[in-house]
Image 1 (cartoon, rainbow, N blue to C red):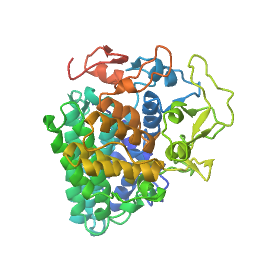
Image 2: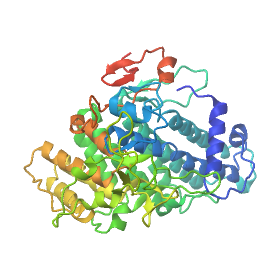
Image 3: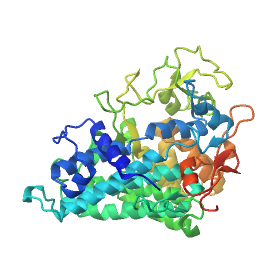
Image 4: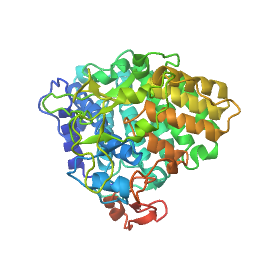
Length: 497
């Protein structure tokens, strides 16, 4: 991955300024100054930027993957690839749809690496004693940084799947581009980061260093000991996704699922949850209308011509005992109040339903947080890990726990003697509605379980792409030509050039 240091420095400092925290150092440190003179104030300002940078691109990921998974559609009309590529294809390496969800992630990874370099410099630089971090303080901050770095790689590999991705990106500007590694290797790298961060957090003492502010969406994880619970939740997710990757865990999927169950045991999972609040508990990205901060653009008012929910979300929803639809779809979707764009141009999808999961008190809320990972998802991850790990009775209990308490549906009909395919279909249904419009879950699950054909094309001659392409700039840097080697995806394939 080639990225200029000057651009990265600007990105790091812009991100630090973008979060709604009070930062005592109003003159943000330059890159060289941060590494050469890593005072507590400068490190705390840079850490604030890391939290802000971690959320970069999350809204784009949700609606882009949600489009490919036929959860929703962007009918703003101001950028045709936004609805043409995911519905009609191909998704293009150089396009404004298919070529995204990449550079911003690697900019953030470089920012994390700079922060880690500054942390290491703090131990050796000629600083006054009050500015020196203790070994425990440095370990705690390092654990947070590498956890956020791992999360960023999770988003990268979620979009590119079997294409793989570069991980060895902390290299000189004039070096050759970082090599792509396989999907399984990316997950292995992610888990290495998370496990190392877990060890650092365990050595991080009772609190983070003074000035190191955990944002409100991570308030439940505001100490090294509690941040471990967030770290372990991500490790559980990474292990489950790795199990279904191409040659995941070297073909021994049971190893991945066992590791996921171990990680879940140290996470914030509450498998006995019955209330909406208990299912919603977890880690979130924050947004606000404060000057310089980012707003949640997915909180689209009912009369706004932007993001719409597809009718299939309603028609596919199962029924509660009284005949009402799955409570999750009722909670997350409502009728649009202005349907002038019932059909937009060449895309025969009605703009009649809107997503409301990012509303507050029934109204659009640009400050509404977006989940990173919630208890409801952890319970469903545990169900999958238990089913394929041999504890099928517990897997069924977890499915029913979510169905009955979140969806208000009858108990699952899956039994311990059901084929794996029956369980997978039931699991995908629960994950689809529990995580609707949160992270592209329907598309991701369909790909990892080999069920992309289960997703309707929704338009004549449409397609459901299997991956996002490698961006054109990455292809060019490696002298590779982008083509449709993968149907409906215009990409190069660095692993098999």
